Image (cartoon, rainbow, N blue to C red):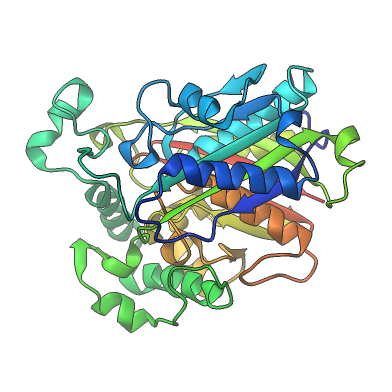
Length: 382
């Protein structure tokens, strides 16, 4: 089945303003977000017959069968559901899958949601980093002490070696995201930063400094999808799904090749093809920014600039991205794909809490999961 370009729309969004929520269970934040998004759509919870989420990390409140657990908590009994889990790209994948389900008549109204207590945590629940268990592929990397930051640092080091990318160019991404966060009243950090301040912040895993890394927060978000026909009868301005692609790379960083591109090479090409568009048609982008290097690699992999030219591209400021402040400044409770979708919708509605562009018509959203392991790309339009 071909992607139903323009036939499915997002009609409601909600982002929790919480950034520190000690003592609040992630499922309670999920409930806040689901109810908020449904209300924003002008619908009621009883209208929802499709549901997608992932909550399998302890900071997200669930473990096995987390989709069922959150649905039970919400009192939802969906006839279509999706518990796909590919890390930070998960919720963009959910949106693509839901669009196909709606077009096929398997659901009428789908809610995609996420929440986590990444900052406050859940007491007494140990949480190992993904891919570092003593069974499975992680056992072969454990002796070398991998961490999420160190795996991305490997990619940054290789890009610098091959293309001459500089720490200053990576720092510019953090500076831009902080500037975008300044007008956002809910952003975790809003004070301006400079390139020198990024480079003076402590090195976490060379060459990545603390301000090259996403913040840690609590939060959650949700969005509501339905058919074009139903969307046009609702009061909110619909934002249409024009193109979609997803791709898997690797879980273990030792298996990544090459280190200087991501699976967005494939997910992006699929999204552009299904939308009948190309990078020059995009007005604004929401790029998963777990680290500054994530943004640079993604821009290249999506074709906004040639491979190896990401540093010069971000210096030139040719594309507006992460207009709410992104994961580097606004929020990052664990997996940020849901927030890139929400901010994409707000931009196209003209209601961004961060930097609002003048009447954008198209927005590309891209999520990255794991250690540059999986990607999902969505093109939105009005």
